Length: 479
Image 1 (spheres, one colour):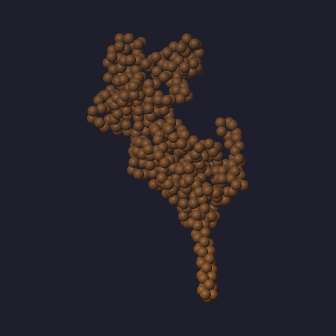
Image 2 (tube, one colour; image 1 turned 60 degrees about the vertical axis):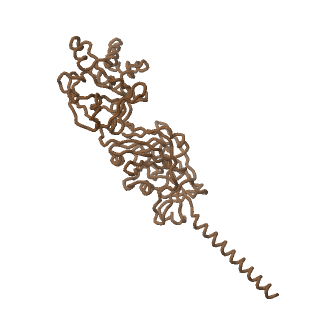
Image 3 (cartoon, one colour; image 1 turned 180 degrees about the vertical axis):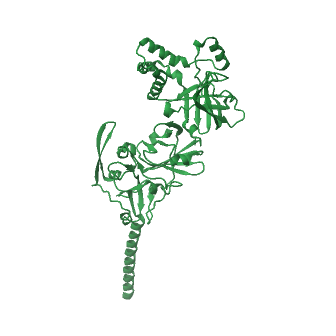
């Protein structure tokens, strides 16, 4: 019995020792498996390598202003290495690493709660200094610098032992938004996305991916392509524009430290650059010109050339009412032939159209109630020289023809060189026949050239258009 008791005690001791060893091994295994989560500065190409089709051309964004890269309100979610603000180097994003020892070889420095950096910027003449502490100090720190996170982040990338990064973990969250293409001075082609500001309100956007119809994925960079979170765009001479021309953007993915958010869109990007510049929705220009609220500004612009009040008033009437005629073609030719003093150009959209939209290779129009009157796909045909009373005017109209055989009066669209970016308005005409399309005084299009301004224009836009119009038409009278 005593021997049995000793055997039992021995077995108990073995069990206790074995249990302790297993617990120790288990705790070590958990420590290795859990690894560490850090917030890290990742250069653009490395960040996008697993997110897009080709990240080789996604480099740091150079900046001539030196201020935008250092302004958190414009470049939030990014970082820069140069304290002078010569460029935006990449993205600040959570990363999972198996051991912190992996980070030391990448060339970064550890940012702690004691880290601090002061950044002074001057925007619009106002100087301000912001102190960035703790993880915020990554905003101006070397590439691959890191800050150890105390908690598991909502989303993250995983760093391999070789120093590459996985795609962001987790599935994108769908957002409901409406997207439209706009051509403007800031970035040539702007993608305006409405309805998602609230969802992104408290989040810095680390990156944006455009998903195209051919499954190509294109990455965007801060300031050059994305600013103030949801606003995105690209230049006509950029690699991004080359990648999207002739294709359709099917979704826009916003990558944030709180998750990836995806907006389904249908934005056809025309291969034709001239048509791309016309992207937008337009309303009649001259009824907007003639609004009483803009008259004082008209007079201010006119009086830069014409000093007398009565003469200035005459110019105002000529430059507004003089382009709101109601006759075109043979009717106009007959009326003005008998009384040339009554000659007035018709600059309205015709056939009951109140809005014209250009989107990709498609042009459409709707009436005052929002009913769509036509919608066709167009391709470039040729340029035709413009004449007035048989004399060449030194400019041309760019002709586009509908793909559909039954387009009728919308078979041809002829656009002048004007764009919202350069002249704040557009000019065009359309019809069933190509003959006399370039003549401003003969044929079925005589004395008609529609003028449009973008729907939802801002006051500064129409004032810029007014000034340009006055400069072009009254400037020659200056003594």
